[in-house]
Length: 319
Image (cartoon, rainbow, N blue to C red; front, side, top):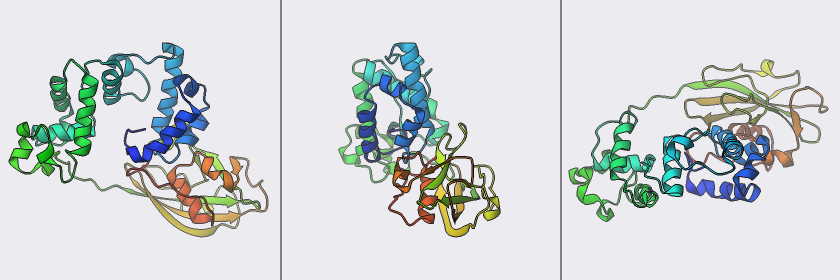
């Protein structure tokens, strides 16, 4: 959960996850739909799918115990270099080079690396591997992460309080905020589409499930015009899933990692729950329990005068 999301935003999710699934065996036994519903609002939904796949494999192939080496940990779904090193060092006291965004910033400044982080990740990892002691590597990794989070911050770093400022090249140069060097910013493309919010006489909303691969895979959604990250969807009521009196309910915008999406929202009040065979009707009181990504919550909120609240992305874009 802490990958690409702030601690403050994660806290309530983490607490409810532990309450619902207190161990890896419980998580492995849970329906994936329940996990996606509990994750809704955190963004980067592939993390939740990988979490479930990882739990399944740990239980089925490893007897419910996580492997204790970086190499084996990296064979599990959703575990890359950083997570594998963090688990190995912190949980199993293995000598591993843990490098997250905070550590990248600390080392970029300490060594005054004059290139974008993306192009020098191997160099930073090698430097961290040399720094990491054989004794208590997990404590060292956490100390370095905390150093970046609390002292060597992106803006206005507290250099005078830093315990390693004597060797920091950027500090002695006098311009630590110049590092890490940022690559040229690319403008995100804008995609267009339409969302269709059908409302039954009792207030229920028609939902359906997205495909199990691609953007927002397996999440719930209101019918829409088939936009993707690479192409626009149709515009207007003629692209609705069935004929009805579709009325404009305004428009919404949502920023994903690689593009911005702008959706025209339409609402139709139908005479019964039978206008389509796909999907299901969700009572408004139950919408908060559905696996709805933020963009779909925005579309529903635009179409319906309801107490249903849109939880904003906890940190930047949500995919």
